[in-house]
Amino acid sequence: MFYIFCPYCGEHREEEEFHPKGQAHISRPEDPEATSDEEWGDYLFFRDNPRGVHHELWVHAVGCRKFFNITRHTVSYEILEVYKMGEQPSITAENYAAQQGAASADKERNASQAKHQEGVRA
Amino acid sequence: MSNAQQFDTRLVGEHAGEIAVESPLAYSMHRSGAPKAKADTTVTLRERAFLGHLTLRGGAIVLDEALRDVLGMSLPGEPLGLVQDEAGERSIQWMSPDEWLLIVPGGEEFDVERRLREALGDAHFAISNVSGGQTLLELEGEAAREVLMKSVAYDVHPRHFPVGKGVTTVFAKASVILRRPSEERWELVVRRSFADYTYRWLLDAGEEFGVGVER
Image (tube, rainbow over all chains, first blue to last red; front, side):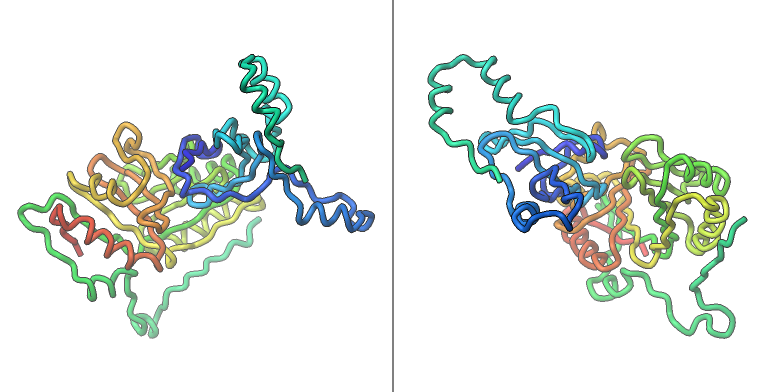
Protein backbone atom coordinates (compact mmCIF):
# COMPACT_ATOMS: atom_id res chain seq x y z
CA MET A 1 0.00 0.00 0.00
CA PHE A 2 1.14 3.52 -0.74
CA TYR A 3 0.95 6.22 1.87
CA ILE A 4 0.44 9.27 -0.34
CA PHE A 5 0.91 12.93 0.50
CA CYS A 6 -1.95 14.99 -0.98
CA PRO A 7 -0.54 18.43 -1.83
CA TYR A 8 -4.01 20.01 -1.49
CA CYS A 9 -5.05 18.44 1.84
CA GLY A 10 -1.49 18.88 3.08
CA GLU A 11 -1.15 15.48 4.74
CA HIS A 12 -0.52 11.81 4.08
CA ARG A 13 -3.49 9.55 3.32
CA GLU A 14 -4.04 5.87 2.67
CA GLU A 15 -3.89 4.65 -0.93
CA GLU A 16 -7.54 3.54 -0.89
CA GLU A 17 -8.56 7.21 -0.99
CA PHE A 18 -6.76 7.70 -4.33
CA HIS A 19 -7.08 6.53 -7.92
CA PRO A 20 -4.19 6.37 -10.38
CA LYS A 21 -4.96 8.07 -13.68
CA GLY A 22 -2.00 7.00 -15.77
CA GLN A 23 0.95 8.85 -17.21
CA ALA A 24 1.23 12.55 -16.40
CA HIS A 25 2.07 15.48 -18.68
CA ILE A 26 0.24 14.24 -21.78
CA SER A 27 -0.86 17.24 -23.75
CA ARG A 28 -3.41 17.24 -26.53
CA PRO A 29 -1.90 18.20 -29.89
CA GLU A 30 -2.46 21.93 -30.32
CA ASP A 31 -3.61 21.67 -33.92
CA PRO A 32 -5.55 18.37 -34.36
CA GLU A 33 -6.31 19.15 -38.02
CA ALA A 34 -2.61 19.21 -38.86
CA THR A 35 -1.75 16.17 -36.76
CA SER A 36 -0.85 12.97 -38.60
CA ASP A 37 -2.67 9.74 -37.82
CA GLU A 38 0.49 8.37 -36.27
CA GLU A 39 0.91 11.34 -33.92
CA TRP A 40 -2.76 11.22 -32.97
CA GLY A 41 -2.51 7.49 -32.30
CA ASP A 42 0.52 8.07 -30.09
CA TYR A 43 -1.34 10.76 -28.19
CA LEU A 44 -4.41 8.59 -27.66
CA PHE A 45 -3.08 5.11 -27.09
CA PHE A 46 0.65 4.87 -26.44
CA ARG A 47 2.06 5.32 -22.95
CA ASP A 48 5.48 5.02 -21.35
CA ASN A 49 6.22 1.99 -19.22
CA PRO A 50 9.67 2.87 -17.93
CA ARG A 51 11.84 0.92 -15.60
CA GLY A 52 12.74 3.57 -13.05
CA VAL A 53 11.44 7.10 -12.60
CA HIS A 54 7.88 7.61 -13.82
CA HIS A 55 5.57 10.62 -13.61
CA GLU A 56 1.96 9.68 -12.87
CA LEU A 57 -1.34 11.47 -12.55
CA TRP A 58 -3.39 10.63 -9.45
CA VAL A 59 -6.68 11.88 -8.06
CA HIS A 60 -7.64 12.13 -4.40
CA ALA A 61 -11.00 10.54 -5.21
CA VAL A 62 -12.33 10.14 -1.67
CA GLY A 63 -11.04 13.39 -0.24
CA CYS A 64 -10.58 16.75 -1.90
CA ARG A 65 -11.16 15.23 -5.39
CA LYS A 66 -8.22 17.14 -6.87
CA PHE A 67 -5.78 15.80 -9.44
CA PHE A 68 -2.04 15.99 -8.81
CA ASN A 69 1.20 14.38 -9.98
CA ILE A 70 3.45 11.79 -8.40
CA THR A 71 7.01 10.94 -9.41
CA ARG A 72 7.46 7.28 -8.58
CA HIS A 73 10.21 4.72 -9.03
CA THR A 74 8.64 1.70 -10.71
CA VAL A 75 11.23 -0.74 -9.35
CA SER A 76 11.42 0.28 -5.70
CA TYR A 77 7.87 1.74 -5.71
CA GLU A 78 9.31 4.67 -3.80
CA ILE A 79 7.38 7.94 -4.19
CA LEU A 80 10.11 10.45 -4.96
CA GLU A 81 8.01 13.58 -5.28
CA VAL A 82 4.44 14.90 -5.23
CA TYR A 83 3.53 18.10 -7.03
CA LYS A 84 0.38 20.00 -7.98
CA MET A 85 -1.21 20.29 -11.41
CA GLY A 86 0.56 22.78 -13.66
CA GLU A 87 3.89 22.35 -11.92
CA GLN A 88 6.95 20.63 -13.35
CA PRO A 89 8.81 17.78 -11.61
CA SER A 90 12.17 18.52 -10.03
CA ILE A 91 13.17 14.85 -10.20
CA THR A 92 13.32 13.31 -13.68
CA ALA A 93 14.77 10.09 -15.06
CA GLU A 94 17.85 12.02 -16.22
CA ASN A 95 18.78 13.84 -13.04
CA TYR A 96 17.75 10.92 -10.82
CA ALA A 97 20.25 8.64 -12.52
CA ALA A 98 22.95 11.30 -12.13
CA GLN A 99 22.17 11.69 -8.44
CA GLN A 100 22.17 7.98 -7.84
CA GLY A 101 25.41 7.57 -9.77
CA ALA A 102 27.09 10.20 -7.60
CA ALA A 103 25.66 8.71 -4.43
CA SER A 104 26.81 5.16 -5.06
CA ALA A 105 29.94 4.30 -6.97
CA ASP A 106 29.22 0.64 -6.44
CA LYS A 107 30.56 -1.18 -9.49
CA GLU A 108 28.40 -4.23 -9.09
CA ARG A 109 25.27 -2.12 -8.93
CA ASN A 110 26.28 -0.19 -12.04
CA ALA A 111 27.01 -3.42 -13.85
CA SER A 112 23.61 -4.87 -12.95
CA GLN A 113 21.87 -1.63 -13.95
CA ALA A 114 23.49 -1.79 -17.36
CA LYS A 115 22.13 -5.28 -17.84
CA HIS A 116 18.53 -4.21 -17.20
CA GLN A 117 16.57 -2.67 -19.96
CA GLU A 118 15.10 0.75 -19.44
CA GLY A 119 11.52 -0.29 -20.00
CA VAL A 120 9.34 1.03 -22.76
CA ARG A 121 9.14 4.64 -23.86
CA ALA A 122 6.19 5.48 -26.04
CA MET B 1 -27.86 44.54 -8.78
CA SER B 2 -28.92 41.01 -8.17
CA ASN B 3 -31.44 38.62 -9.62
CA ALA B 4 -31.13 36.11 -6.78
CA GLN B 5 -34.37 34.27 -6.16
CA GLN B 6 -35.49 31.95 -3.44
CA PHE B 7 -36.39 28.41 -4.44
CA ASP B 8 -38.12 27.04 -1.37
CA THR B 9 -39.16 23.51 -2.28
CA ARG B 10 -41.20 22.85 0.86
CA LEU B 11 -44.93 22.42 0.44
CA VAL B 12 -46.96 25.29 1.86
CA GLY B 13 -50.59 26.23 2.51
CA GLU B 14 -53.25 23.60 1.94
CA HIS B 15 -50.66 21.17 0.52
CA ALA B 16 -48.44 21.24 3.60
CA GLY B 17 -48.50 17.89 5.29
CA GLU B 18 -49.69 16.02 2.22
CA ILE B 19 -46.35 14.28 1.90
CA ALA B 20 -44.85 12.96 5.10
CA VAL B 21 -41.23 14.03 5.53
CA GLU B 22 -39.05 11.12 6.54
CA SER B 23 -35.41 11.21 7.52
CA PRO B 24 -32.94 9.00 5.63
CA LEU B 25 -32.78 6.75 8.69
CA ALA B 26 -36.53 6.48 9.36
CA TYR B 27 -36.80 3.16 7.56
CA SER B 28 -33.51 1.85 8.98
CA MET B 29 -34.58 2.50 12.55
CA HIS B 30 -37.89 0.80 11.84
CA ARG B 31 -36.27 -2.22 10.19
CA SER B 32 -33.01 -2.65 12.09
CA GLY B 33 -34.23 -1.31 15.42
CA ALA B 34 -32.82 1.42 17.61
CA PRO B 35 -31.37 -0.03 20.83
CA LYS B 36 -31.93 2.19 23.86
CA ALA B 37 -29.04 3.41 26.00
CA LYS B 38 -28.29 1.07 28.91
CA ALA B 39 -26.29 1.49 32.12
CA ASP B 40 -23.07 0.29 30.42
CA THR B 41 -23.53 2.36 27.27
CA THR B 42 -20.33 4.19 26.35
CA VAL B 43 -21.30 5.46 22.91
CA THR B 44 -24.46 7.18 21.77
CA LEU B 45 -25.61 7.46 18.18
CA ARG B 46 -28.11 10.02 16.99
CA GLU B 47 -29.24 11.34 13.67
CA ARG B 48 -29.60 15.06 13.18
CA ALA B 49 -31.92 14.96 10.21
CA PHE B 50 -33.35 17.76 8.09
CA LEU B 51 -30.47 20.19 8.52
CA GLY B 52 -29.68 22.58 5.68
CA HIS B 53 -26.55 21.50 3.77
CA LEU B 54 -25.12 23.92 1.22
CA THR B 55 -22.08 23.28 -0.94
CA LEU B 56 -20.24 26.53 -1.67
CA ARG B 57 -17.73 26.71 -4.48
CA GLY B 58 -15.67 29.65 -5.62
CA GLY B 59 -12.76 31.79 -4.56
CA ALA B 60 -11.98 31.86 -0.84
CA ILE B 61 -11.82 35.66 -0.63
CA VAL B 62 -15.23 36.47 -2.14
CA LEU B 63 -16.96 33.62 -0.31
CA ASP B 64 -15.38 34.66 2.98
CA GLU B 65 -16.65 38.22 2.56
CA ALA B 66 -20.17 37.06 1.69
CA LEU B 67 -20.30 34.68 4.66
CA ARG B 68 -19.17 37.44 7.03
CA ASP B 69 -21.98 39.66 5.71
CA VAL B 70 -24.69 37.01 5.81
CA LEU B 71 -23.84 34.81 8.80
CA GLY B 72 -21.06 36.67 10.60
CA MET B 73 -18.80 33.62 10.11
CA SER B 74 -15.57 33.26 8.21
CA LEU B 75 -14.19 30.38 6.18
CA PRO B 76 -11.71 28.03 7.85
CA GLY B 77 -8.25 29.50 7.30
CA GLU B 78 -6.51 26.16 6.75
CA PRO B 79 -7.23 23.01 4.73
CA LEU B 80 -9.23 20.40 6.71
CA GLY B 81 -10.59 23.16 8.96
CA LEU B 82 -14.03 23.27 10.56
CA VAL B 83 -15.47 26.43 12.11
CA GLN B 84 -18.72 26.79 14.04
CA ASP B 85 -20.72 29.70 15.35
CA GLU B 86 -20.95 30.21 19.12
CA ALA B 87 -24.16 28.20 19.49
CA GLY B 88 -22.68 25.33 17.46
CA GLU B 89 -25.71 25.39 15.16
CA ARG B 90 -23.96 26.52 12.01
CA SER B 91 -20.70 25.18 10.67
CA ILE B 92 -18.44 25.63 7.69
CA GLN B 93 -16.02 22.92 6.68
CA TRP B 94 -13.16 22.94 4.18
CA MET B 95 -13.78 20.25 1.56
CA SER B 96 -11.30 21.13 -1.17
CA PRO B 97 -9.28 24.24 -2.11
CA ASP B 98 -12.36 25.76 -3.76
CA GLU B 99 -15.20 24.02 -1.96
CA TRP B 100 -16.79 24.33 1.48
CA LEU B 101 -19.74 22.66 3.19
CA LEU B 102 -22.06 24.96 5.11
CA ILE B 103 -24.53 23.34 7.51
CA VAL B 104 -27.32 25.46 9.00
CA PRO B 105 -30.46 24.63 11.03
CA GLY B 106 -33.18 23.03 8.93
CA GLY B 107 -35.33 25.39 6.89
CA GLU B 108 -32.80 28.21 7.08
CA GLU B 109 -30.90 27.04 4.01
CA PHE B 110 -33.27 28.59 1.46
CA ASP B 111 -32.95 32.06 2.95
CA VAL B 112 -29.20 31.73 3.54
CA GLU B 113 -28.69 30.64 -0.06
CA ARG B 114 -30.64 33.63 -1.40
CA ARG B 115 -28.77 36.08 0.83
CA LEU B 116 -25.42 34.58 -0.16
CA ARG B 117 -26.35 34.87 -3.83
CA GLU B 118 -27.27 38.52 -3.30
CA ALA B 119 -24.03 39.21 -1.44
CA LEU B 120 -21.93 37.43 -4.09
CA GLY B 121 -23.60 39.26 -6.99
CA ASP B 122 -21.62 38.76 -10.18
CA ALA B 123 -18.69 36.93 -8.59
CA HIS B 124 -17.71 33.52 -10.00
CA PHE B 125 -19.28 30.99 -7.63
CA ALA B 126 -21.70 28.09 -7.25
CA ILE B 127 -24.03 27.24 -4.39
CA SER B 128 -25.83 23.90 -4.33
CA ASN B 129 -28.46 22.88 -1.83
CA VAL B 130 -27.55 19.28 -1.03
CA SER B 131 -29.78 18.94 2.06
CA GLY B 132 -31.81 16.12 0.59
CA GLY B 133 -28.75 14.15 -0.47
CA GLN B 134 -27.02 13.69 2.83
CA THR B 135 -27.64 13.40 6.53
CA LEU B 136 -25.65 13.99 9.67
CA LEU B 137 -24.97 11.31 12.29
CA GLU B 138 -23.45 12.02 15.67
CA LEU B 139 -21.35 9.71 17.79
CA GLU B 140 -20.86 10.76 21.37
CA GLY B 141 -19.27 9.15 24.39
CA GLU B 142 -15.95 7.77 25.52
CA ALA B 143 -16.06 4.82 23.10
CA ALA B 144 -16.95 6.96 20.07
CA ARG B 145 -13.31 7.06 18.98
CA GLU B 146 -12.99 3.30 19.32
CA VAL B 147 -16.02 2.75 17.09
CA LEU B 148 -14.36 5.00 14.52
CA MET B 149 -11.07 3.16 14.83
CA LYS B 150 -12.93 0.01 13.77
CA SER B 151 -14.46 1.77 10.79
CA VAL B 152 -12.04 4.22 9.18
CA ALA B 153 -8.43 3.85 8.08
CA TYR B 154 -7.83 7.49 8.98
CA ASP B 155 -5.92 8.20 12.20
CA VAL B 156 -8.44 9.53 14.73
CA HIS B 157 -5.99 9.90 17.61
CA PRO B 158 -6.54 13.31 19.30
CA ARG B 159 -2.95 14.24 18.45
CA HIS B 160 -3.72 13.81 14.76
CA PHE B 161 -7.40 14.73 14.82
CA PRO B 162 -7.92 17.74 17.10
CA VAL B 163 -11.23 19.48 17.70
CA GLY B 164 -12.03 21.72 14.72
CA LYS B 165 -10.78 19.33 12.05
CA GLY B 166 -12.83 17.65 9.35
CA VAL B 167 -11.81 15.23 6.61
CA THR B 168 -13.42 13.25 3.82
CA THR B 169 -12.31 9.66 4.03
CA VAL B 170 -13.27 6.02 3.59
CA PHE B 171 -15.66 4.61 6.17
CA ALA B 172 -16.23 0.87 5.86
CA LYS B 173 -15.69 1.06 2.08
CA ALA B 174 -18.17 3.94 1.75
CA SER B 175 -17.17 7.60 1.77
CA VAL B 176 -17.89 9.81 4.75
CA ILE B 177 -17.23 13.35 5.86
CA LEU B 178 -15.82 12.94 9.35
CA ARG B 179 -15.59 15.96 11.65
CA ARG B 180 -14.87 16.68 15.26
CA PRO B 181 -16.79 19.70 16.60
CA SER B 182 -15.98 19.00 20.27
CA GLU B 183 -13.91 16.72 22.50
CA GLU B 184 -16.53 14.02 23.03
CA ARG B 185 -18.57 14.40 19.87
CA TRP B 186 -17.85 13.24 16.33
CA GLU B 187 -20.02 13.99 13.33
CA LEU B 188 -20.42 11.88 10.19
CA VAL B 189 -21.98 13.41 7.11
CA VAL B 190 -23.11 10.49 4.96
CA ARG B 191 -24.86 10.19 1.65
CA ARG B 192 -28.56 9.47 1.92
CA SER B 193 -28.14 6.33 -0.17
CA PHE B 194 -25.45 5.07 2.21
CA ALA B 195 -27.24 6.11 5.42
CA ASP B 196 -28.85 2.71 6.02
CA TYR B 197 -25.57 0.88 5.41
CA THR B 198 -23.66 3.25 7.70
CA TYR B 199 -26.32 2.98 10.40
CA ARG B 200 -26.26 -0.81 10.40
CA TRP B 201 -22.46 -0.81 10.37
CA LEU B 202 -22.42 1.52 13.40
CA LEU B 203 -24.93 -0.64 15.29
CA ASP B 204 -22.74 -3.67 14.65
CA ALA B 205 -19.44 -1.92 15.43
CA GLY B 206 -20.92 -0.28 18.54
CA GLU B 207 -22.50 -3.43 19.93
CA GLU B 208 -19.54 -4.24 22.17
CA PHE B 209 -19.76 -0.73 23.64
CA GLY B 210 -23.51 -1.03 24.26
CA VAL B 211 -24.37 1.53 21.58
CA GLY B 212 -27.56 3.44 22.35
CA VAL B 213 -29.58 5.23 19.70
CA GLU B 214 -31.26 8.52 20.62
CA ARG B 215 -34.25 9.45 18.54
